[in-house]
Amino acid sequence: MNNAKLVIPNCNEFMSIYGFDCEIDDVIQTIKFVNGDERVTLSFDLTVNSVRLLFYRKDCIVVDLYLEDLSELYLDENGNSLSFKFSNSLHIIINFYPQINITGTALL
Image 1 (cartoon, one colour):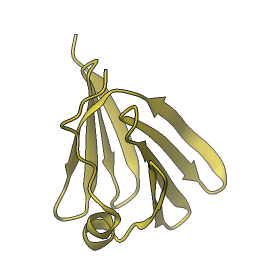
Image 2 (cartoon, rainbow, N blue to C red; image 1 turned 180 degrees about the horizontal axis):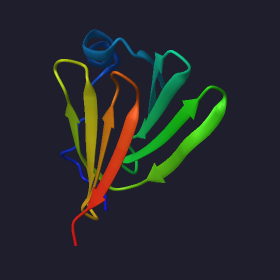
Image 3 (cartoon, rainbow, N blue to C red; image 1 turned 120 degrees about the vertical axis):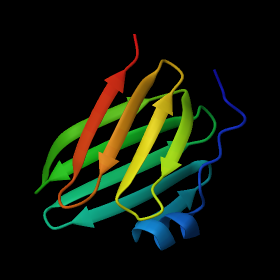
């Protein structure tokens, strides 16, 4: 399922709200956030509305998640969190402060 209504904010929006490093390579937009010895890398592929989430603590991968059918993306204007909803009712929230915390819920 490809959701044509989904709009991923551009690099300038991610940089101004969150201070993320951001780059675009063809159809993949990658953003990176670092907080002390923790870091998050998010890659969005608009051809399949997918997101890949990598969360590192020190140099170890804590979370490596790839999901397609991203249906909604919410930015917190204060830069504290980011949340995603997928077509299968999965909802993921990333809180960035005071430390990175990732939670996921699914509606049954």
